[in-house]
Each structure stands twice: as C-alpha cells, then as structure tokens.
Amino acid sequence: MLTPQEALQKRQELVELGYTVVPGVLQNPLLDELRHWSEDILDRVSVDPKYRYQGSDIHVSTRRKWHTTRGQTPDERQFSDPIVERIIDLPEQWEACRLLGLEGQRADDKIILLSKSPHGPPLYWHQDFTNWNHPEAASRWPTRIFLSYYLTNTTRENGCLRVIPGTHHMRIDLHDVLPAAHGEEIQAVEDLSHPAFMDHPGAVDVPVKSEDLVIADARVLHAAWPNRTDKRRTLLLQWHSVFPFPNPPTWWKGEIPDPIRNADPNVEYERTRTPGTHLS
Image (cartoon, rainbow, N blue to C red; front, side, top):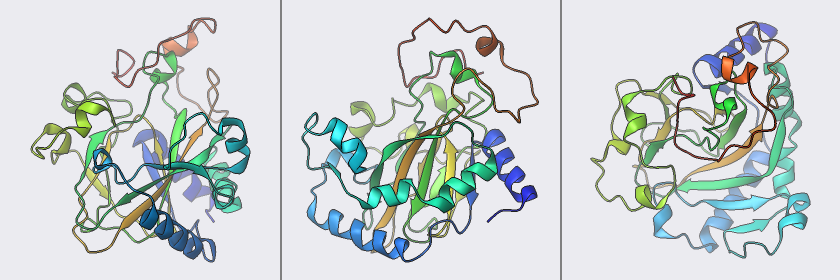
C-alpha cells in the first residue's frame, strides 16, 4: 500500500501539517455498497435544518457499541448497522495506520454520515478537539484523529475539504473569532460573510478520490467549500484515539513538551472546545 518512504512522508504530513491522504484504501465492492447504503439512509432520514452547514450528522454505530448504549439517546439519526463494523475493521485501513506508526489506536466504533446536499452551503472553519485544558493539547503528535472517506471524487466545485496547515500547533487570528464547533451559535449564523466562512490566506484545498483515506488531527482548523453541483457529496467520518497519554510515539525523536513531562496523572481537567494556553 505504501513504501516505507511514503509512509514516513505521510506520518510527517500528519504531524507537521495536521493532515494527510493515503490513496486507494477503500475499494469495491465495499465502496459501492456504502454508496447505495448511504443514499438509502439520506433518502429516508429527515435532517434538521440546523445541520445545514455540516450536512446531515447521522451517527451509525457498530453492533458491539450499540449493545452498550441503546436507548440512551433515542433519535432517528442514531442507530446501528452491521456495515459499520466492516468500515471500522477494514484491514486496509488498519494497515495504512500501522504503516504510519499510529500506535495505541482505538476506534470510537461508530461513523458519522455527513452529506452535503446539492447546492448546499459551505462548512464553517472549526476544529474538533474537546480537551484543550488537558496537557495532551500541547502534544506535538496527534492524540485524537479523524478518518474520512468521501464516497465520490471531490473538487472545489462539489465541496472538497479545506485545511489550514499547522493550526493544530499554531494559534492564528481565526482561533479568536470562531464560535464553538457545531454549537448553537455557529448553527444560527445566516450571514456567510461571518469570519467562520472566510477564505483564509493560509487555507489549502484537499481534493481526493473516493478510494482515498483522509487522516487528520482533531486540532487542525478545517472547513469545506459549498456544493455547487446537482449531486450529494457524502462523507463517512470516524473518530480514533492514538498514542495514549502521556506516552509519546516510540518513533518520536523530538522534545517532550513541558506540560506533558510535568503532568500530574491524578488531575482531572474540564473539557472544552476552546483552545487555551496549550495552543502556542
């Protein structure tokens, strides 16, 4: 899948830029099955207008996870399906992550179905990390990652991913003006001139093919262009934890940040989506 040199490059991109793309991971027949499966769900599950920027926000669990959570949050947008285990457990996906050296990897055992409707609006700039008070936020390596598959080839025209490289480690002006990701404030925004939708000079487009696996650090600022086509642009998103705190990767040769070296394992930290002092 990847030569050792390619795998090292992908790892460096993830660590330094905050994202990378591994080509050719999701293949048929599963890819076509997921296309038909997702279209069926999106045709029959209603989507609250507040999710218009995200797309749909449908959470589908593995059966093993559903057995432990069923009934806690009754919602037509939350259910289980056996196909999810085939995505989460995909050998090619785990091999790609192994080649990148993503140690201690643990999946959340669900996917989030995010479909940008035809002529749907852009997705606002945001980061998805929720543990900014914790010393792990100062880590130079990822501890929380998302794995994404787009079920069609993406371009700027149909709403491809956008990323501001390095923002998982570096504070920029945008951090100080963004509402909390996916919260009521940003969902209520009607004016696309809001800074959350700005064309930031540091942004890069990340167009991919439907077979490609996108891996990104939860802390990196990312968004998506609007879908200007007549077809849905559907995304399957997974969340994984890697490199359990406080242990650095076995391949790490850099310095260990002071907040991690000096961390007290007995201290509990309030979770927050707002970057604090650990983001330099």
